[in-house]
Image 1 (tube, rainbow, N blue to C red):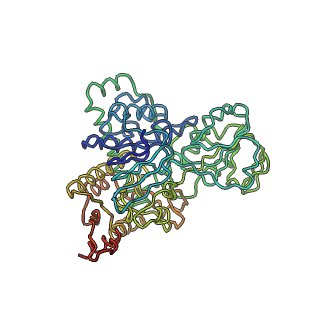
Image 2: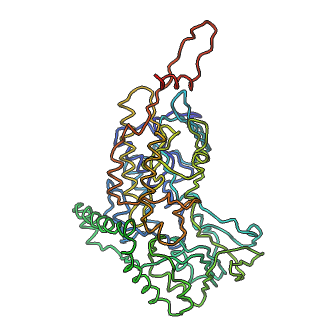
Image 3: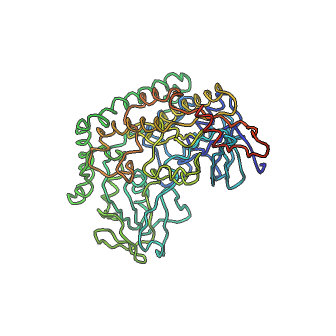
Amino acid sequence: MAKHEHVRVAVIGSGFGGLGAAVRLRREGITDFVVLERADAVGGTWRDNSYPGCACDVPSHLYSFSFAPNPDWPRTFSGQRHIRAYLEHVTDTFGLRPHLRLNHEVLRMEWDADELRWRIETSAGSFTADVVVSATGPLSDPKIPDVPGLDGFPGRVFHSARWDHEYDLRGKRVAMVGTGASAIQIVPAIQPEVGRLTLFQRTPPWVMRRVDRAISGPERWLHRTLPVTATLRRGILWGIRELQVGAFTKHPGELGLVEKLARANIARAIKDPVLRAKLTPSYRIGCKRILLSNTYYPALAQPNVDVVAAGLKEVRGSVVVGSDGTETEVDAIVFGTGFHVTDMPIADRVFGAEGRSLAEHWKDGVQSLRGATVDGFPNWMTIIGPNTGLGNSSMILMIESQLNYMADYLRQIDVLGGRTALAARPSAVHAWNRKVQNRMERTVWKSGGCDSWYLDAHGRNTTLWPGTTGEFRRETRQVDLSEYEVVRAPKPVKAAVEGAAEPTARSARKKEAAS
C-alpha cells in the first residue's frame, strides 16, 4: 500500500455497519472507497466475541441484511460461528475484499478546513477522504472496571469479548463478573466443566425462555427455491416486534403479563427460595434488555455454582471480594461487564472543524442529528450513532435506515457540486435531541426503576431509539438540507495591496457566510 492514499469515502470498521456501508456504496456506483479495519479479519463484534455459548438473541432471518438474505440459517437463533460466516459471505458476494485495509487501526482523524477533507492516520499508513463513515459500533471496546488489587491477581483475567482460548477452564475455580447478555450464555456453557463457578451479580436480569430450534431441511429448501417465503418470514418477525414497541416506549404498564411469564420461568428452574429471591429483579421488566435463555437458571441451580448478589469490590491475591464481604479464592476471573458505549474511545481520535476532539465535544453527553451527523464535524457520519439502539428488535433494520441516509447525503454533495461539505447545524442537532429525549421520558428505560448501560453519566438515555424501526426509517429516508450548512472550499483571494497577506481560510469562510 502507498504511504498516502486519497479516497472519496473512508469507512471505519468491518462489522455489520461497515460492510453494509461498503455494499451500499457499491450499489450507488461509488467504488472509490476503503474500509479501514484494525483487526486481521472482518466481522466486528461477531469476530471479537467468540466465548463459549455465544449466540444472537434476535431471530436469524431478521438479523441479516434485507439485500443479502440467507436461506440456510441452521437455527432460528444463530450462533456466533454462523453469523461470522455470513459476514464473510457478504464480503465475498459483493466484492468487498479489494476495498478492505485490514490491520489498519485508526489513530487520528482530523478535518482539513482548507481542503475540505479528512486526514486519517492509521497504524499502517495515512489516508485522506472527502467523507468518513464511522461504523466502529458501540460494542467494540470492552469495559473492565477498575477493581482494587486486580493487577496483583496471580491467575488469568480476561473479558468475554477477548476470550482466552488457550486457557483450559476444566476443573478451575472461576469468577464470572456481570450478568448481561454475554454472561447468561457463558455461565451454562462453562458450568459443566469448571470445578467451581462464582457469579458476581450486581443486578439480576429478567430472563425469558428462548424459543430456539433447528431449521429443518425442507424449510431451508423452500426458502432457497421460493425466496418470497423467507421474505415473508422476515416480515412476520419484524411485524411482531413493531407491535411490541408501544409497551416499551409509551405504556410500560402493559409489560406486566410479560413480567409474570418471566417470574414463572425463574420458579420453574429455581426451587431454592433463597436463590430465587437473589435472581428476581426489583425493577420493571424491559428497563434493562430482556435476556433469552433456557439454560441459565438451571446452571445456577447446580451444586458447583455460587451466586453472590453483589458486585466485585476488590481482589486480594487470589481471593475475590464482593461488596457484601463475600470472599472466594479463584483461579480465573472472567469479566462480562459490557463495553464503552457512551464514552467510545474512537471519539478521542476524531478532531473536527474547530480542532476539538469528538470526545470533548460530547463531554456533556453524546448527541447527533438523526443518529448520523454531528455539528462541528463536516462530512463525518456514524452508523449506529446516538439514540439508534433497540431494546427488542434487530439492529440491522436501523443500520439499513442509516445506509439510506448515508446514500442521500452523498447524493446531495454531488448535486451541490465542486468541493463541498455538509455541516450539521447546531440548532438542528439540538432540536432533534430535544424531541428524542422528550419521547424518552415515557419509556420503560427511564421509568422502570433500573440503572442500565443505556444511560450516560447524567442519567440520559443516549443509546436507544424511543420508537419503531418504521418511524426511524421515515425519519432517515432523505437528507433535509435546511438542517445543514453548505460549506464550500475557500477561494484564493488576491491581496489588494502588494505584499499584503492572503486572508486565512477561516476569515474567508466568515466573509462568505456574511455575504
